[in-house]
Image (cartoon, rainbow, N blue to C red):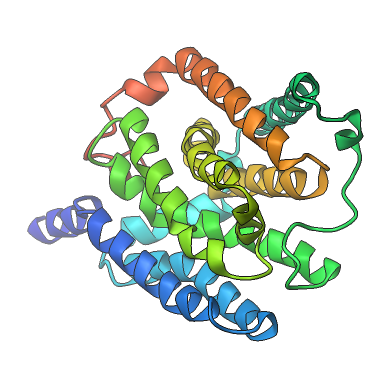
Length: 283
């Protein structure tokens, strides 16, 4: 009986370590990205991908060495648990983001932008790889970022506070994680350096987007698969719809409005505290 209780405590009583996770995720990402700043594009791009992989690797290592069977099972279920996915919510989230893009383009007309933005862009925004490789990079980014951030990161913060506060903190940290990309030639972020407003907009927009993807995550019972699908759609739309940088600034305003509506419509989801200290207990 005592052995069974000890096993239960070992599985369910795991203590998340968000500060250590973020320190490791940043370190093992930036250790590749910072040198890439000073290298030619053809050499920098492999380092870029290694940095992109790092949060997922750190997340997986944290879970594998945790000693918690419940945490390991939780990761497996979040990635492969199709039963978790709320497909209606996933479809709704995709529609919401598509509408955000549409409204942003129409609103941008008042600022001198063109309806030509509804066309598909010929090229991707990051130029360091070919078109086929760029598409593969988008897919890899969508998968690996979500495995990293949803595999361990978001739960490690949410285990100690409500999901509203978690979304603010995660959005800010996730946003700043991209910082070295501003200086790596061929990346989307580097293309924004022509105007400080575009750079600021990129980092600010990540915070409300953090709320939206948390909504997708929680609505599907913490499914990474649901987040990958949504993230892939967002990345593709941001890369292939021919929105100007000016329109993407307008888009950030629309994203804030959409986020406010989502939070108000899901107040219990974002402000409940029942899950605090009990994320794994619900599994």
